[in-house]
Image (cartoon, rainbow, N blue to C red; front, side):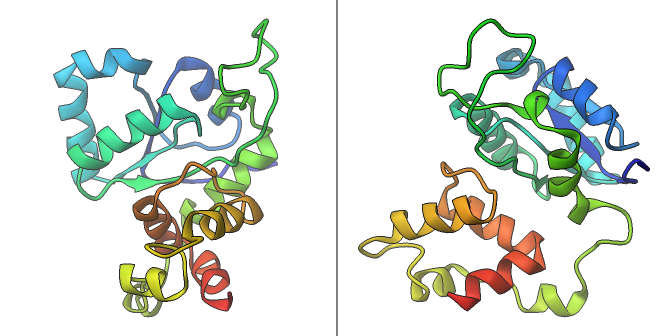
Length: 191
């Protein structure tokens, strides 16, 4: 199967994540090195430079550590795009035990699953200007019952589960995801 052509640099946590992605895309892939990233200001500057150039896509695991790294980059690198893997429970082949949360990371996803989450970022799949003008807002999320009200967290979790997004996703991250993927925005508005 052909590799997806993605112009942005994909940011991942570790070398095994990079190896899994190398089978799916021809994009440049940058490794954070896990939490060592916090002690490497040069790497953060590189990510900012890449974001200002062709852009970056953050693709971390859907566990607590992955979201911590993602949120740090989100605050430090304006304009970074975010790609999410679904919550899949199991154990990576190279590991003796499952992770603390029991979820597979990027390295544990099948090539087809990675291809599916990256497809919206492939060349030629950019959202149209018309879609961008119709972006979902925080107010709309509230009106639809996904934030701020009784049962919003449950509704958000159910939507994420049904659409292969991590359940841990915040309101802000959900907003980013649906505004990056027109088909998700349409599903959200259908509810």
